[in-house]
Image (cartoon, rainbow, N blue to C red; front, side):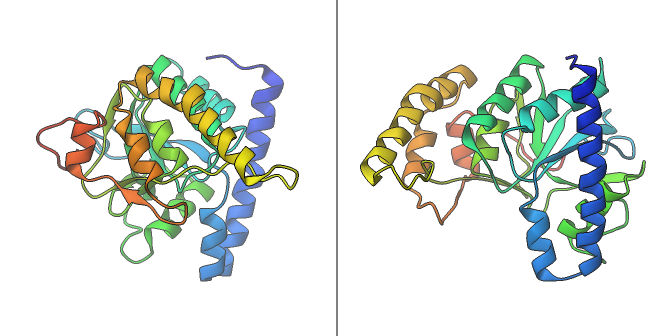
Length: 255
């Protein structure tokens, strides 16, 4: 998946700036700093760990952590370009972001026949001395060849849940969380609440419903999301993951 050279340079420059920001934030060592980290834009990195660390015969994967934004699909295309002919799995850790770009991410995953899961990428031996969140950002700020996956309470919420549906194979570890809630229409002071609700319904009918069909997902997933308040989160149960067609493995455990 080739990108123009200038776009590649811009993506690398953005990555350097983001890593400098990460180092500064982590130096603060405060709860507020870690909240800033959680809200940062999604970043991608090719990680390598010990043999079988990302599955049988797998030691290299793509880490995808942070909020999904408008530019995230193009940044995913850039990291896939770096991966070349290797068919690497991707592991998400995200509290959400923008809905429409998440569908674009899902379609990239499907086009590339990718496998996806939910986990944080952390340096080997970083935990439990440090938190999973802190460890994942330490790895991104100063990447090394010694990486591992942390599944405990790893989250793929809101827009991230729609993105991961695009993967041909979805491996949702029982220790990780796939969560959905109601969507929010774009805020606009000139738009009434009624108009925003119409925009939201149009998005569901025109974009989301066809996407579910395209990815082989039961549309009941949207019903579950619609019944969950925006400030809440419905973490899908093992039974729901199976029934909705998201992860139908009979025996589930650490890969």
